[in-house]
Image (cartoon, rainbow, N blue to C red; front, side, top):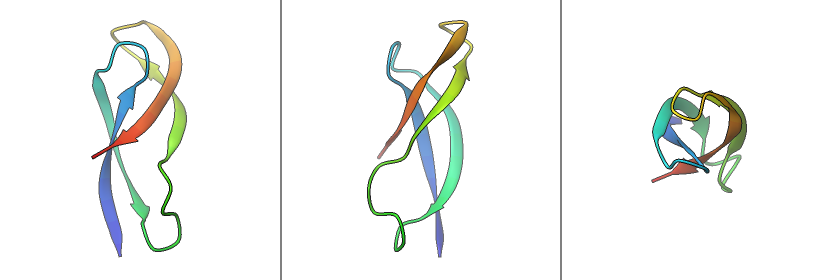
Length: 49
């Protein structure tokens, strides 16, 4: 079963993106490089609760 997760910018702490992941297969927190509209450049976004 896939759960909806929220991605938060590591620099400005804004929650910009939502995505899904299978928590049974990947129990660790997801971290992706995404574009942050507030920072206006690509930054690392990490999964938050």
